[in-house]
Amino acid sequence: PHAIESGPTSGISDLVSWLGDDARQIDARSMDQRFHSSSFPILQVDEHAEMAFKGRRDLVVFTTKRLLIVDVKGWTGTKVEYKSIPWTSVQAFAVRSAGAVFDKDSEMMIWTDIMFEPQV
Image (cartoon, rainbow, N blue to C red):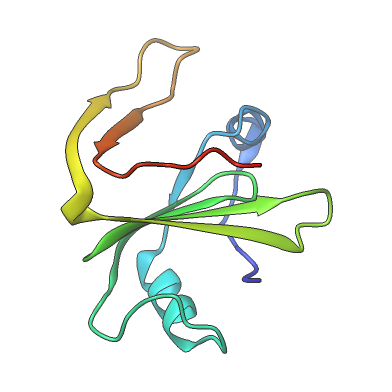
C-alpha cells in the first residue's frame, strides 16, 4: 500500500477540515512520482497526475486518463482499495461550490456508464 502524505497544515481550520473529512488539494507532481516509481506502479507510462486531493486517509487523483480514487480501509490502513474511472466512461458531471461560513465544502459529482456489481 501507498502511504499518503499531505502538505503543511495550520491551525484550527485544518482540525475542523480533518474532523469533517474535507479533502484539500495536494501537490499532483508528488503523486505522479509516487504512482510511477513505486514497486507497484499504478499510472501508465504516458499518464500523468494533473490534480490531487487528500482527505483524512483517502486520496483522489485526476490524471490525464482517469479519475483514481484511493480508499484506505480499516483501523490499521493496511488494506487499500483502488478505483479507476476512465474519462471515456464519464457521461456527465456537476460541481457545487462552497456555501456560507459553516459550509466550506465544494463538491463534484460524476455519472458514468460503468455498471457496478453489488459487493458480497
